[in-house]
Amino acid sequence: MDLLDLEYMEIDEIIIKKEEFDILMKLLANLQPVLRDILYKRFFENKTFKQIGLELNRSTERIRQRYCQGLRLLRGGMVREYKIYQ
Image (tube, rainbow, N blue to C red; front, side, top):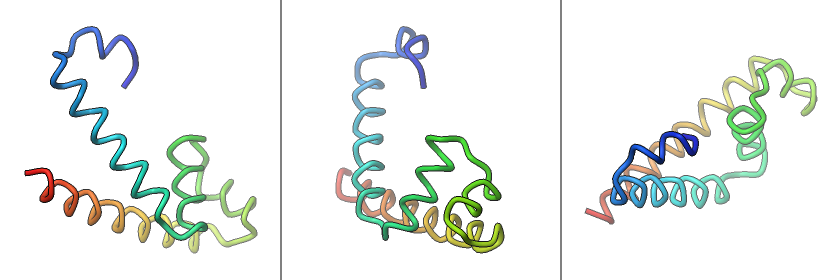
């Protein structure tokens, strides 16, 4: 989401997006450091599994496995957090 998207959103939509982002960042911060690093590099640095593997001295397949593990944990956390808010 960028600033242009915000121009066309209602204030309540913006607040919801901000809350979702805050929850996601909290969940990300609570992951194991290696999972957090992999997800951060993939999402925010836009790196490939191969690039991350080279940086962390792990195989591309292992990085892909840990990435999927991290995503499952984030998804589970988001589901739990939304149940709390509803």
